Image 1 (tube, helix red, strand yellow):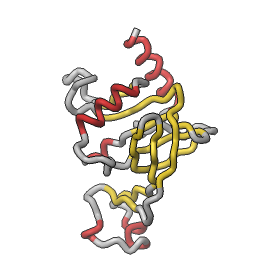
Image 2 (cartoon, one colour):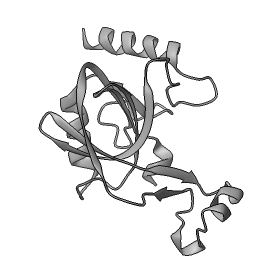
Image 3 (cartoon, rainbow, N blue to C red):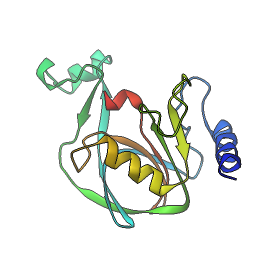
Amino acid sequence: MKNLKILIIALFLLTVTSCEKSEPVVADKLERIEGLIQIDGDNIKVDRVKVVDTSNEKLVKEMGLKDEDLHPAYYIYNPEVEYEDFKLSDKAYFIFTDIEGKYIDEDVDNKEYITDSRSEFMDYLENTYSEFPIKVPYILYIRGDKIEVIYENFKYTI
């Protein structure tokens, strides 16, 4: 039954993802935001940020960023910390990179794991991050005050 559920979610993702990227494409009624998350019971607090790709030299220069500000792959622009409260949709799903092979067979090349299980996602966070709030930006797809997708871009975790 669980495999059938994952297959259905995977098929759904195939209809909403781009061929060039593994990140879900914004659907008409979903808003894409980037943010730092804190999970507090049923509430998810999101501090919106802008993730700047450091290879975008023009933007880095426009923002006045210095080498010491930059991570090798990205910069988190967060001029002020301001959390917004969201709830998870009843049909929310989570995408994260299962480096440890806890959810995906270690022989699989693509370690991106998709689940609709909040407990699996919480287990992943608790076993991956030692510091809370998490300093890794997540990509969230929201509808109103409900989060439909929480996506961890592997590039942001390194």
